Length: 561
Image (tube, rainbow, N blue to C red; front, side):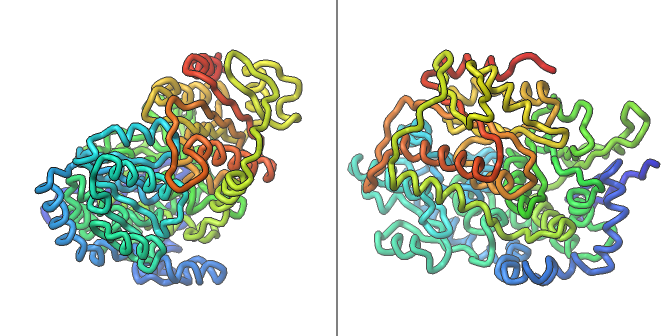
């Protein structure tokens, strides 16, 4: 029996739409099944009031110190005057290039904010030596480095800070005048930044987790320095916040949350496509929010960010939930029907930038309640970091490859390689591990802004066509702060393809006895080790030169099933 489309929209005082969510097919059934109960239990108003009991006794302690994000559209406003003054100071000195060193929530939201506004922001969220080297090639005299970390001990961000600060000094500049810090109050980084005399230190609300921090100083400072009108972003969020606090069937956050977390059986592969929303890389930001918030205790929502012609959307599998990001000016698509005449399952989301960020945060918190998990912890994120630290401290000899094929070194457990002597055979063995509810994760510890990004552009979709299963593509170590949590704590149905390579440049890290090549190698090896310990199949392919990477891309794209 087809369910009617569930459509909710909220307009501003001038009648213009601010937020719109539509759910059809199984998603509409989920809305009908769960939203009345959420309304009766006053979930929306309790969430807006920062009630920590919404996710059960086990989650209460964590939730008690993680809910301040619901009011950031008001509590972040004291930042505005200070940010405007600092940007004017920098401009007067000819400093107009903003480089952001940060990972996860410290980089993804600023990237969305700046890209949507068309502002120039160099986001350095990688330990790939070539990507770090590129950040050093810009005009350092015109550069301000924003170091963004809740503690300051994140190895990627600390290494980036050390390297760029040394480059400032080598260029004859007063490095402290070119560094701005965003951190938690009382953190080691705040103390170190104050002692070093950095140009400015901003502290964020400590009662907000990283992936919910878009409207804190972590999101607003780098975006504002790059030229984004962050006051308008806060205004957009403030305009819709009252709607999300209403215990009403027409609450867009309840509708989206129910569609995400309430399908039965669970459509746990959330395939996100942007259909002209105008919100730059919003899917990448939502990817972290979904994966890190829900991927634990053996359950979770796997975000799969795709392009327009994604194979996953041609004939969605029973465990796929298509989510389409649309512009507000589009007319609502009532969902239509599939080839069998049933209502097509789909969710469409449209909204202003600030409003959409707040919408997804509320919806994911609601989905966490329906899934029965704590959406604010990330119990498995630290595992890969600890493994990488261990490898850096031990500096063991590199694991020899099982074999090399056309410049590609192949590593993996014996039971996975199973006698393979070519890359194609090894990849075939990995793909053979995919079950009917499985997914493939491609994890590329390479330069996403360089040749690797272009060479591998078609790999994700090609593998999805080959396997007829959802395929994610993450750039390492960036994805460790995002889908890495779900890989290890979510459903054990994934197969993992790790790609590494030899960088063109060698970049030392001042004050450390390892360079960036050693660091990214340890991060990749540590991630693979933890996945293997947890019974996940991992195939590791290391390309020794650019020609080998191009050849490998051809092998991976292979013939469709």
